[in-house]
Amino acid sequence: MIMQFVRVRISIVKALMVNLKLLRCEEGVPENNILKYLIKKPGSFMVDSKRFVKIVRKVKGSGFNPSYTMRWGWSDDRIQTAFRKNPQCMMVSEKKIMAIMNFLVNEMGYDSSIVAEYPKVFNHRLKERIIPRCSVIRILVSRGLIKENISLGTFSTMVDKSFLEKFVIKYEQEVPELMKIFQGVFNGARKGTGKETRNVQCLPTTIQWPPELGAS
Image (tube, rainbow, N blue to C red; front, side):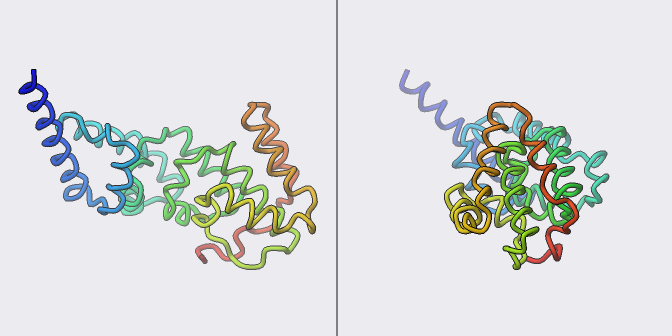
């Protein structure tokens, strides 16, 4: 029984090492990104190496598939860069990627190449995180309260506490309804009422955000 357990453990370790080498050497994923993903999803690496290769190829094919990412002007190089920065994004469904891209590009005015630089945005939920935060940012820009350029990576990856302190609480006196806008959109999304769409459409749409695309 003990020897069987030892053999299983050795097999798992070997598979782990082979799978890590695959991402590191063949796919070119940076070490720090591999470590982050390993900490979050350790079980994903502890599978048979042949199966792991199939999974990697499958998610690369079903995630950032050229047939629909090319619509947004993504080259093969951009797709590979996104994968190296955030391997987890390859597990996101086509439907979710298209919805997020459509909102950020067509509603918020981001260039698609800028979105490609921050693939972690695809890890977040559109209605529960991205839309509420963008709603707050857009109304602050329309009121002239935010003058500096804010990168997509900055406000999309902030923890809730930091975002609320920097973009909501800070401007509550100038925009008393700001907290209600954020919480109303968020709560509506959580309950599945569809209020998140109506709230976003009520915000100004004539502004160009971000003011200078590509600036951080």
